[in-house]
Length: 187
Image 1 (tube, rainbow, N blue to C red):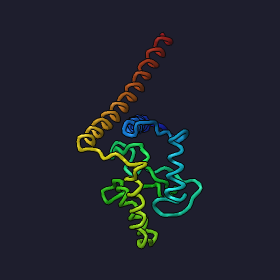
Image 2: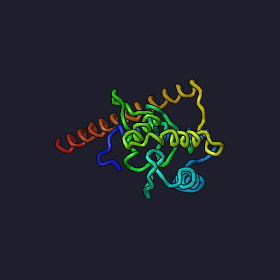
Image 3: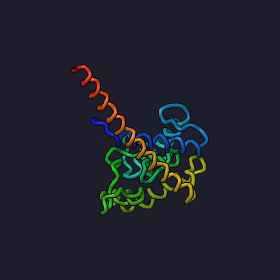
Image 4: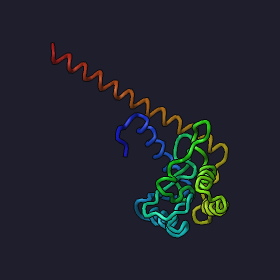
């Protein structure tokens, strides 16, 4: 939960809502992991496919979180879709960054975790397990064309900037109205 909400938070929320809708468009149904079939899918992915263990480090954890492999943001525009989520522990859910301070792709993050934990002997096994999940018949993540990816990039960036701009305009309008009413009351 955010302690201090900003226009960036509002814009990020709008982008995630959009990517959720598009994920459901490709899935052809709702994917609400809080209830119904979506929750059943999440529990199956977490408990059966990944055996109640973190997909990255392999540790069991009672509080596994959802990790979007293709990040669920305006940079990577990963869809909220069962083929794009895996269970991870809290420490592994903090994506590592490269030298340019950009978040690493999930494969590179997995490699970083396996290297950090001196577990290179099981890197390939974990990589294969995640790839099998992404491509599974049951939860297959849609393979998007370059045109679809470009459309997602354009729309998410436009949505992000539009929401941020509307937020700034709303604050300015509030300030103007407050100033107008304050001056009127003091005349």
